Image (cartoon, rainbow, N blue to C red):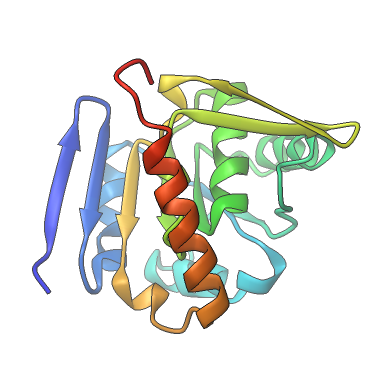
Length: 182
């Protein structure tokens, strides 16, 4: 599989086997030294992998990422981000981790690096969602697209078949939402 890089005016996309190894240099390019790692409880083992890759130089982790980005989870993550003195955040996982990263970016403006582990593609859309009082509200914010997206194909090789199928269908839905105005 050929590796490649895609550069949009405000976004870099890295794709390839072992592309996760480029995380330290991507953080350096952004001037970041204390990332907060965002992920779900089921992907918490990735925190150790990322910390090892960064020689332990992380501000901390937030592993209470939840589907549909509940406002109270975002507020909890924001407090944690502030308390550990993070200067950026790295979301690793599926759409839930990506969504929390976007919500935190909207509130802080700190750089966001996204490492997807599914195929859904929400990291490439300008849509920001938030759930409050059991109602999910979305809006478009072009600036909420992560500064860097790192697609490492190795992170998807153990994806369960049902998650592969549903996230692939979700990717088609995200592609169908693209218009020249988004």
